[in-house]
Image (cartoon, rainbow, N blue to C red; front, side, top):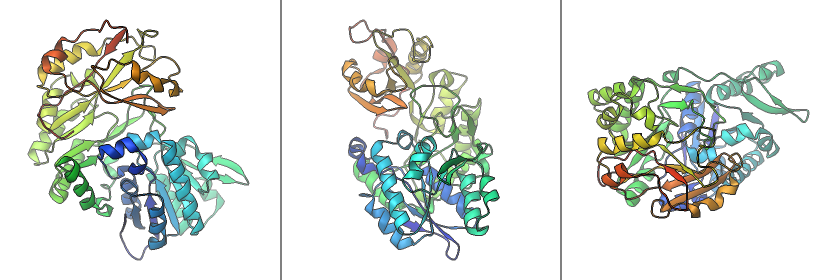
Length: 445
């Protein structure tokens, strides 16, 4: 799909290479979200005076639709800007990298200057340059992209200017040049809201209602995460963390609620509500501004248990919170893969079970230990997990991920959750569960 805005200015075509159709399991699950990071970049660049078009690959059939978008838009500059908020994009499955390379080639054949941004491109800039990209944005990309477009379109060259652009990779005389790192944007409230007007909202709404009976949208309240979980990909922000104000987030939620009438939200942050008091203030504003929507998010058990966070989450509309669970195999019973002893989540689990009335429980699971940097050796570990507890184990053979458990502990009731002890079976020496159930039966997943 392609959407356009602002006639008369230099036209920039944005796209991304995550095609849901190329991921069979997630295509079957069919919970598509627009590329939020791409929408942020498009909105920012539009604010700097450029005309922006969007090709949204999420529901597209194949890369050939990108070629159609190129023919229709006829841009001079094509930007493949991946959604750094979506963990699926951060994983960058090989098929999606192949799609990106194909899209780069198509754009080059139509005479476009190709710019690429994203987690995989940051890690492997030379590969993308070899595939035909002219420039790769390293790390957080909005400001770097704005400066680069000004250089290309308005300043018409000048080597000293190009070298002065922070966070950029390109080739000169056959050699890779990487300019100094650009500091992260700390004032996230200064960014415009994502360019939702470029999205085919009704197509997404139709898919969600047909498959799930409700419509879900996505919002980012923060960028990055300070923790060091070794299953997580962090090529963009590393352990750095910056957050929008509760006021700014609630203003966006209220606008989305009025404008598009979603039934549910996905808070896409790596960690939601980390700053002390943020969730409490957020819940107050949600009620004051009539911006309450059911939502799902990702957090940590130890943080959720502080203060009145659980009650504030309930008031704000939380229906499902994912937290990390850790699984030890027999050869590695006392460590989480980073040298940390286990056991911290068990008391939290019981407390959460008493604080909420779960209908179902979900958690993300990884298996630390052998080759946690390579992780491909874990592809067979799913079969070794207790099948009674883990009915849907998703294995992601990627260099930055070990196991992603799609749905764990599917049907625990409250008593079972609160009374669970370390299992004594032969499959694992210890299982640590960190889970926050959601309250409403039949609530959106």
